[in-house]
Image (cartoon, rainbow, N blue to C red):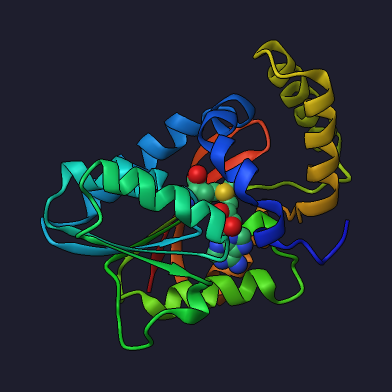
Length: 234
Ligand SMILES: C[S@@+](CC[C@H](N)C(=O)[O-])C[C@H]1O[C@@H](n2cnc3c(N)ncnc32)[C@H](O)[C@@H]1O
Protein backbone atom coordinates (compact mmCIF):
# COMPACT_ATOMS: atom_id res chain seq x y z
CA UNK A 1 0.00 0.00 0.00
CA UNK A 2 1.08 3.55 -0.66
CA UNK A 3 0.16 6.77 1.07
CA UNK A 4 0.20 8.95 -2.02
CA UNK A 5 -3.20 8.21 -3.53
CA UNK A 6 -4.28 11.34 -5.36
CA UNK A 7 -8.08 11.55 -5.83
CA UNK A 8 -7.69 14.14 -8.60
CA UNK A 9 -5.43 11.82 -10.55
CA UNK A 10 -7.42 8.67 -9.86
CA UNK A 11 -10.87 10.19 -10.49
CA UNK A 12 -9.85 11.76 -13.81
CA UNK A 13 -12.19 12.76 -16.65
CA UNK A 14 -12.67 9.33 -18.23
CA UNK A 15 -13.09 7.50 -14.93
CA UNK A 16 -15.52 10.17 -13.71
CA UNK A 17 -17.55 9.89 -16.93
CA UNK A 18 -18.07 6.13 -16.49
CA UNK A 19 -18.26 6.18 -12.66
CA UNK A 20 -22.05 6.04 -12.31
CA UNK A 21 -22.24 2.94 -14.48
CA UNK A 22 -19.13 1.19 -13.14
CA UNK A 23 -19.80 1.75 -9.46
CA UNK A 24 -23.14 -0.08 -9.66
CA UNK A 25 -21.42 -3.14 -11.16
CA UNK A 26 -18.37 -3.13 -8.91
CA UNK A 27 -19.81 -2.27 -5.49
CA UNK A 28 -22.30 -4.80 -4.19
CA UNK A 29 -25.34 -3.08 -2.72
CA UNK A 30 -24.37 0.43 -3.90
CA UNK A 31 -28.01 1.41 -4.52
CA UNK A 32 -29.15 -0.25 -1.30
CA UNK A 33 -26.48 1.55 0.72
CA UNK A 34 -27.60 4.92 -0.65
CA UNK A 35 -31.28 4.07 -0.12
CA UNK A 36 -30.60 3.02 3.49
CA UNK A 37 -28.65 6.24 4.12
CA UNK A 38 -31.61 8.16 2.69
CA UNK A 39 -34.17 6.50 4.98
CA UNK A 40 -31.96 6.89 8.05
CA UNK A 41 -31.43 10.59 7.38
CA UNK A 42 -35.11 11.15 6.63
CA UNK A 43 -36.04 9.72 10.02
CA UNK A 44 -33.70 12.14 11.78
CA UNK A 45 -34.18 15.41 9.91
CA UNK A 46 -37.05 17.87 9.62
CA UNK A 47 -38.43 19.68 6.57
CA UNK A 48 -35.57 22.18 6.54
CA UNK A 49 -31.99 20.99 6.78
CA UNK A 50 -28.54 21.72 5.44
CA UNK A 51 -26.58 18.56 4.63
CA UNK A 52 -22.84 18.17 4.15
CA UNK A 53 -21.85 15.57 1.57
CA UNK A 54 -18.16 14.87 2.12
CA UNK A 55 -16.78 13.24 -1.04
CA UNK A 56 -19.91 13.91 -3.09
CA UNK A 57 -18.34 12.51 -6.26
CA UNK A 58 -20.76 12.66 -9.18
CA UNK A 59 -23.66 13.77 -6.98
CA UNK A 60 -25.42 10.48 -6.19
CA UNK A 61 -26.40 11.48 -2.64
CA UNK A 62 -27.73 14.88 -3.69
CA UNK A 63 -29.66 13.59 -6.69
CA UNK A 64 -31.24 10.92 -4.52
CA UNK A 65 -32.16 13.10 -1.53
CA UNK A 66 -32.99 16.52 -2.96
CA UNK A 67 -36.13 15.73 -5.01
CA UNK A 68 -37.91 14.28 -1.94
CA UNK A 69 -37.05 17.23 0.30
CA UNK A 70 -37.58 20.70 -1.17
CA UNK A 71 -36.51 22.29 2.13
CA UNK A 72 -33.12 20.56 2.22
CA UNK A 73 -29.95 22.30 1.03
CA UNK A 74 -26.69 20.59 0.20
CA UNK A 75 -23.02 21.41 0.32
CA UNK A 76 -20.86 18.84 -1.46
CA UNK A 77 -17.08 18.80 -1.20
CA UNK A 78 -14.76 16.75 -3.34
CA UNK A 79 -11.13 17.25 -4.44
CA UNK A 80 -11.77 15.78 -7.92
CA UNK A 81 -12.70 18.45 -10.46
CA UNK A 82 -13.72 15.72 -12.92
CA UNK A 83 -16.18 14.12 -10.47
CA UNK A 84 -17.64 17.55 -9.62
CA UNK A 85 -18.06 18.32 -13.32
CA UNK A 86 -20.22 15.19 -13.65
CA UNK A 87 -22.14 16.19 -10.52
CA UNK A 88 -22.86 19.66 -11.91
CA UNK A 89 -24.15 18.27 -15.22
CA UNK A 90 -26.29 15.70 -13.45
CA UNK A 91 -27.76 18.10 -10.88
CA UNK A 92 -28.33 20.76 -13.50
CA UNK A 93 -30.33 18.31 -15.61
CA UNK A 94 -32.58 17.66 -12.60
CA UNK A 95 -32.94 21.33 -11.69
CA UNK A 96 -31.20 20.82 -8.34
CA UNK A 97 -28.35 23.30 -8.56
CA UNK A 98 -30.14 26.15 -6.77
CA UNK A 99 -30.11 24.28 -3.46
CA UNK A 100 -26.62 22.91 -3.94
CA UNK A 101 -23.16 24.32 -3.34
CA UNK A 102 -20.27 22.28 -4.71
CA UNK A 103 -16.76 22.92 -3.40
CA UNK A 104 -13.63 21.57 -5.06
CA UNK A 105 -11.61 20.57 -2.01
CA UNK A 106 -12.00 18.81 1.31
CA UNK A 107 -13.89 19.48 4.54
CA UNK A 108 -10.98 21.76 5.48
CA UNK A 109 -12.21 24.15 2.79
CA UNK A 110 -15.68 24.58 4.30
CA UNK A 111 -16.78 27.96 5.63
CA UNK A 112 -15.81 27.62 9.32
CA UNK A 113 -18.99 29.46 10.38
CA UNK A 114 -21.43 26.98 8.81
CA UNK A 115 -22.98 24.27 10.97
CA UNK A 116 -24.76 21.41 9.21
CA UNK A 117 -27.77 19.37 10.34
CA UNK A 118 -26.35 16.11 8.94
CA UNK A 119 -23.50 14.67 6.92
CA UNK A 120 -22.83 11.78 4.59
CA UNK A 121 -19.38 10.42 3.81
CA UNK A 122 -19.95 7.41 1.61
CA UNK A 123 -17.08 5.36 0.14
CA UNK A 124 -14.48 8.07 0.77
CA UNK A 125 -12.54 7.59 4.02
CA UNK A 126 -11.10 4.20 2.99
CA UNK A 127 -8.83 6.10 0.57
CA UNK A 128 -7.15 7.89 3.48
CA UNK A 129 -4.32 6.34 5.50
CA UNK A 130 -4.75 5.84 9.21
CA UNK A 131 -1.85 8.18 9.94
CA UNK A 132 -4.04 11.06 11.08
CA UNK A 133 -5.76 11.54 7.70
CA UNK A 134 -8.84 9.48 8.59
CA UNK A 135 -8.98 11.22 11.98
CA UNK A 136 -8.69 14.65 10.31
CA UNK A 137 -11.54 13.93 7.92
CA UNK A 138 -13.81 12.81 10.76
CA UNK A 139 -12.75 15.75 12.94
CA UNK A 140 -13.52 18.14 10.06
CA UNK A 141 -16.97 16.63 9.60
CA UNK A 142 -17.64 16.63 13.34
CA UNK A 143 -16.59 20.27 13.68
CA UNK A 144 -18.96 21.24 10.88
CA UNK A 145 -21.97 19.48 12.44
CA UNK A 146 -24.48 20.78 14.99
CA UNK A 147 -24.63 18.81 18.27
CA UNK A 148 -26.85 15.74 17.89
CA UNK A 149 -26.47 15.72 14.08
CA UNK A 150 -26.19 12.35 12.29
CA UNK A 151 -23.36 11.19 10.05
CA UNK A 152 -23.79 8.28 7.66
CA UNK A 153 -20.44 6.74 6.86
CA UNK A 154 -19.60 3.87 4.51
CA UNK A 155 -16.22 2.33 3.82
CA UNK A 156 -14.37 -0.77 2.84
CA UNK A 157 -13.15 -2.09 6.15
CA UNK A 158 -11.77 -5.07 8.00
CA UNK A 159 -8.40 -6.24 9.23
CA UNK A 160 -6.60 -7.32 6.05
CA UNK A 161 -4.57 -10.12 7.70
CA UNK A 162 -7.62 -12.21 8.64
CA UNK A 163 -9.35 -15.23 7.02
CA UNK A 164 -12.55 -13.15 6.99
CA UNK A 165 -10.90 -10.53 4.77
CA UNK A 166 -9.55 -13.16 2.36
CA UNK A 167 -12.93 -14.92 2.18
CA UNK A 168 -14.92 -11.74 1.55
CA UNK A 169 -12.40 -10.44 -1.00
CA UNK A 170 -12.59 -13.73 -2.92
CA UNK A 171 -16.39 -13.68 -2.89
CA UNK A 172 -16.45 -10.03 -3.99
CA UNK A 173 -14.09 -10.88 -6.88
CA UNK A 174 -16.39 -13.67 -8.09
CA UNK A 175 -19.40 -11.37 -7.65
CA UNK A 176 -17.81 -8.82 -10.02
CA UNK A 177 -16.98 -11.50 -12.61
CA UNK A 178 -20.54 -12.79 -12.43
CA UNK A 179 -21.77 -9.26 -13.17
CA UNK A 180 -19.99 -9.31 -16.50
CA UNK A 181 -16.98 -7.18 -15.62
CA UNK A 182 -14.01 -7.95 -17.83
CA UNK A 183 -11.54 -10.15 -15.85
CA UNK A 184 -8.73 -7.74 -16.77
CA UNK A 185 -10.69 -4.87 -15.20
CA UNK A 186 -11.44 -6.97 -12.11
CA UNK A 187 -7.72 -7.67 -11.76
CA UNK A 188 -6.95 -3.94 -12.11
CA UNK A 189 -9.60 -3.19 -9.49
CA UNK A 190 -8.03 -5.65 -7.06
CA UNK A 191 -4.64 -4.01 -7.55
CA UNK A 192 -6.26 -0.61 -6.90
CA UNK A 193 -7.78 -1.96 -3.68
CA UNK A 194 -4.45 -3.44 -2.54
CA UNK A 195 -2.58 -0.24 -3.40
CA UNK A 196 -4.98 2.57 -2.50
CA UNK A 197 -7.42 1.37 0.15
CA UNK A 198 -6.40 1.70 3.77
CA UNK A 199 -8.33 -1.01 5.59
CA UNK A 200 -8.91 -0.73 9.30
CA UNK A 201 -10.89 -2.98 11.60
CA UNK A 202 -14.36 -2.00 12.73
CA UNK A 203 -12.99 -1.60 16.27
CA UNK A 204 -10.54 1.00 14.94
CA UNK A 205 -13.33 2.75 13.01
CA UNK A 206 -15.41 3.01 16.18
CA UNK A 207 -12.38 4.46 18.02
CA UNK A 208 -11.78 7.03 15.28
CA UNK A 209 -15.45 8.04 15.33
CA UNK A 210 -15.50 8.32 19.14
CA UNK A 211 -12.29 10.38 19.14
CA UNK A 212 -13.86 12.75 16.59
CA UNK A 213 -16.80 13.34 18.95
CA UNK A 214 -19.37 10.85 17.66
CA UNK A 215 -21.08 8.99 20.49
CA UNK A 216 -23.70 6.52 19.34
CA UNK A 217 -22.40 4.46 16.42
CA UNK A 218 -24.61 1.86 14.77
CA UNK A 219 -23.65 -0.58 12.04
CA UNK A 220 -26.50 -0.60 9.52
CA UNK A 221 -25.05 -2.11 6.33
CA UNK A 222 -22.68 -4.85 5.24
CA UNK A 223 -21.92 -6.07 1.70
CA UNK A 224 -18.79 -8.23 1.64
CA UNK A 225 -16.06 -5.80 2.80
CA UNK A 226 -18.24 -2.68 2.55
CA UNK A 227 -19.81 -1.45 5.78
CA UNK A 228 -22.15 1.39 6.67
CA UNK A 229 -22.54 3.15 10.03
CA UNK A 230 -24.79 5.77 11.52
CA UNK A 231 -22.98 7.98 14.03
CA UNK A 232 -24.34 10.82 16.12
CA UNK A 233 -22.32 13.87 17.06
CA UNK A 234 -22.49 14.35 20.79
C1 LIG B 1 -15.88 6.17 -4.60
S1 LIG B 1 -16.21 7.89 -4.77
C2 LIG B 1 -17.71 8.05 -3.81
C3 LIG B 1 -18.57 9.17 -4.30
C4 LIG B 1 -19.98 9.21 -3.72
N1 LIG B 1 -19.95 9.47 -2.30
C5 LIG B 1 -20.72 7.94 -4.02
O1 LIG B 1 -21.14 7.25 -3.08
O2 LIG B 1 -20.88 7.62 -5.20
C6 LIG B 1 -15.00 8.61 -3.68
C7 LIG B 1 -14.94 10.12 -3.80
O3 LIG B 1 -14.22 10.61 -2.67
C8 LIG B 1 -13.46 11.70 -3.10
N2 LIG B 1 -12.39 11.97 -2.11
C9 LIG B 1 -11.19 11.38 -1.98
N3 LIG B 1 -10.51 11.90 -0.94
C10 LIG B 1 -11.33 12.82 -0.37
C11 LIG B 1 -11.22 13.70 0.75
N4 LIG B 1 -10.13 13.72 1.52
N5 LIG B 1 -12.26 14.51 1.04
C12 LIG B 1 -13.38 14.48 0.29
N6 LIG B 1 -13.55 13.67 -0.78
C13 LIG B 1 -12.53 12.85 -1.11
C14 LIG B 1 -12.97 11.30 -4.49
O4 LIG B 1 -12.51 12.39 -5.25
C15 LIG B 1 -14.22 10.64 -5.05
O5 LIG B 1 -15.03 11.53 -5.75
